[in-house]
Amino acid sequence: MGRWAADAITHVGAPAYGAQIPVNLSLECSGKTNHVRFRFEDTGSSLSGDNNVSLYDTAGGDKIEGLEIELRYNGTKVNVDNSTLTDTGSHGSFVSFDPIFDSFSTAAFQARYVQKAAVTRSGTNYTGPVTGKVNMYVIYD
Image (cartoon, rainbow, N blue to C red; front, side):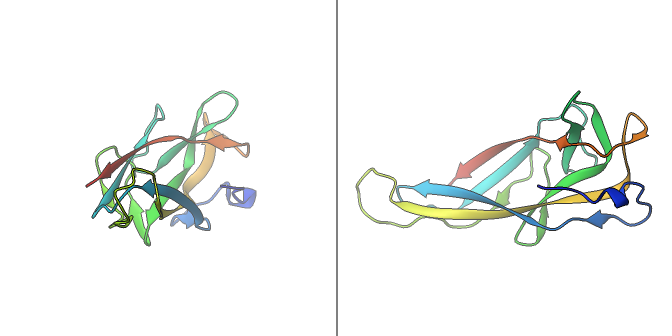
């Protein structure tokens, strides 16, 4: 994801958004499917109330307040709530009855930082590295 501007650490007011970073998910198919749907689940212990990816410091795993990662698809926010399905449409193509994976496609998501308050860890301003993780589920039909 890269760095978030340290001068924004005490941000007050409307949310500040970072640049959208491509998150290209490569798909390999042995045929065509009409829908490929994704569902994302935040694996953190303190989930975001805004259905974003929650962040933690990399050293001790303490929750970072005020900064999250927003996932997007086709310019629309993707809820990281373990229930919302994002349909990326049709992927693959009918090629043959050969069982090899011979149809490739990409689901092009984006991620960006969103800051809604001062960036803190345990109530103190924080400028160190962060981590956040999600489980991803894929449904083909």
